[in-house]
Image 1: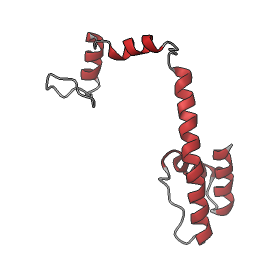
Image 2: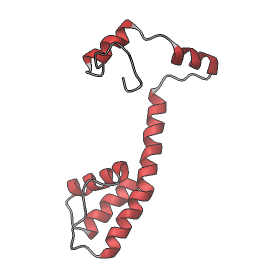
Image 3: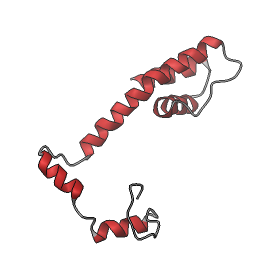
Image 4: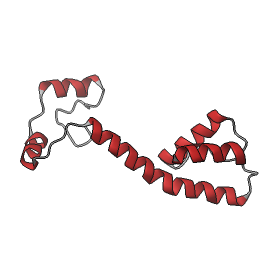
Length: 113
């Protein structure tokens, strides 16, 4: 709904086509904005865009977290979860690190890897 409001707002106020308004709305909500509004826009439009980002970024975070929670395997038992976290790295996981270029070849797995 929030992205839809931003799309309509962008199409009416800035006169952007749907595709540009959609990109503006999604990027403003997900990153705080990668597509600037035109320099010759009235000052209130900049403030309103900031307001959209201030509400949109947390809303997008909650939405992505909820989506991620739906896709993850659920573990209600904290002891079982601790076992999974502390489990040794498998050979398959090491191969995945190498295949995706995440292993730096120093013979140790650090937090970044």
